[in-house]
Length: 255
Image (cartoon, rainbow, N blue to C red; front, top):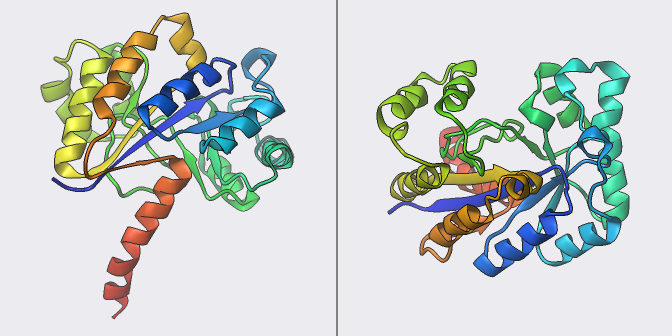
């Protein structure tokens, strides 16, 4: 059995994140909460005290823009403000550096990616699914699964848009038969245990509340918790681990 990492991350900063954090604490799982300063449709996000409490409990807080726009539709100064100002606001609230960023709706392009890097983030998470490899760009961190009952078409679209033909083939002939996102998550976790890599669950607490997915989420968390030879990490810690593991190989190449 190879070394595996279990990662979770949660977007939009909804007040239901506090309920989610309690579930994660009880399961012994780490998480990154990506918080916009103003939520989708102007919705209120977590208060300053809530954010500081999450950090004090060992969770990571990452940035998710000022107003949750589709960043690929922005350019220049407007794009810079969305990406940069949210970092500064969160750092003032938390009294520490905010290293991780998440692209709203998973939409980004080369200009967005370069802006995120230039602002000074360590890395950024995407919404690419069905991945568990441990080799990827720090600014295009993929995920394994969303805590949501997607139709098969969503997975086809997600894989096809990035021309990931090997995983598209695997989904069509191996994974599509699974009856629920819970079964899919368990199967992909088992594969990550066997092959090694990063099993990354992401989602939105408001969506879990809206569609009554709390029990299903608990089943998934219970399945992946307390496993030997598994590291439980947030997004920033995951990049640290993978970077350290890559360094010996890099030194051998140089020699």
